[in-house]
Image (cartoon, rainbow, N blue to C red; front, side):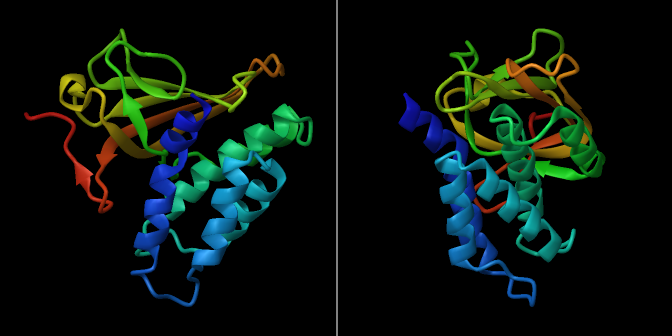
Length: 210
């Protein structure tokens, strides 16, 4: 199960590194740099993942053609939550850090959609409205929820269309809230609006057939 979770969490990021090579700019992130970041995330080396993701965010422009900055922002948030879990970042520092991501585009890793919500790290339907979904993103050991991710799509989300498929979701960070109780049971809550599904070639796809 641990290996499955790793694949679901990070297979989209390896795809991104290939796509990134199509955008040749002076601020380009190399294959080696991407691989170092992926390796740090996969091994939950939160310090390295945080340092690299935040460094690469500064290298890229908001309009970089590889469209990878949204992924880097998510990686930075995810690794920051990991640092808090390990006691290497305070909740107060986390609260300051996340402020810079509000209103910015985030791209989440590829995960499997599950109508019946099989458990952690799946895209699950919301009981409230048809245009919302939720992910409970846990660490590999299953000892903490690094982030509850609340996804609000531009249109109604057709769960029957995507059930059992893996998708990546992009959107705008409407709110990012560290756990006010400052406990490691849950670290972050991330709310996105204007959500959309991303295909393998980094293209948006409508979430309904309307």
